[in-house]
Length: 525
Image (cartoon, rainbow, N blue to C red; front, side, top):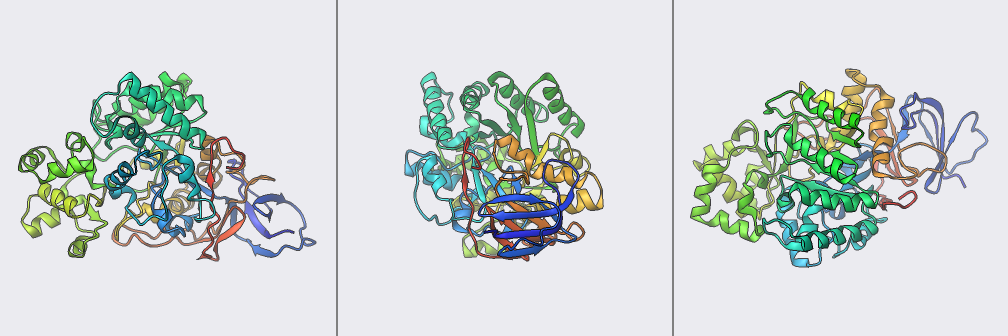
């Protein structure tokens, strides 16, 4: 029985090749691409796609959905963009394995300004148990990468100290077990404790383990290293060089505050590839970044975990030192806009900058940050200018670049990238500014990330591949989200199909949750 037939659309298959007109038939969770007359077929349903693009579902190479999607399984900010698969566990911050449930709860609190602290539908400890939480329970597919933070916590606790040889052996064993249960590699977020306490040699040894199992090294680089410009990227490349692992630098761009140009960053990556190394990266098309507010605090005060951190924030001596050391992450306190408050008394601060709150209350900006973090159990997120808009297109359109939304799904004022990353590229970069062709943009969103992760049977429209499909209008697709009004769904994305099931039907969410946990080395996930 033919379940669904999409007719008369321009099929752009994800390969980067020009499109062609034809039909896509879906039976169960698989597709068949058809040419010629299909009038004799009798599908259960037909979608007329004249004037529309039919392409593979989009793959987000940087998603902060690992907890939020379990509490909000319809996942509308992402699936409405055409995203059918997400990579979670990024930035070194992931939620399995944890041998201690207390450590798990502490880690959720520590990272709550990035991944939230929602009510969860169950408990898990291993990677296998965690992945079971997603199958047929969420609207998109989930690919998982193991953050080095939980690996380090399980092996050696929360403290800032070098790893011993036995610690390294334990971490390698933990990583190996998690990858054997389906994870796609290891991630690091080297501005986020406790994973940031790992030195380069530790990360090389863990990457050797991941490389042996066919995994990748996915890294938020150590931005405070050396010159704070090129040296962080050099470390990522060196880890790949010395471990033999494919390296993927996430959310790569030239910062507004960088001491040099974007061309020098891209040249580093290009030179590494010319050397014979396997290096790629992802970017997002917005000039606003977003993360947990904790990132502006020095690493010394976070050693020992969230309980020790709170003691520092409460102490007079700790506050005095923090006032002397903490500076705004960005151009000024007035360009760090806060969101994700749970206490009613603080809801008025949604969308306010640290500077505005400090001026209104007459409190030092560092004390504002510390007081609010204590009151809100560390969960505050913020938005600030990040990428240099003048050079950002050079990163997004680069041949080695994929798309990673880095979408933080928290608060009343998230970054607009949460709702608009993929459609913004299709509308502004492709249609309006013609910075890249539509087939090339779709390749960056589909087959290229599938190839990078090793997702077999996905990322292309090919006979027998899994039916993850987007149908959109190339003339009307757009992303209306702004910083002041970020929670606006895209326009022009009419149908999104995940594993053969319609999730977005005529721009309406059907309530379906056909997503699967994709596993390394398994055909079709």
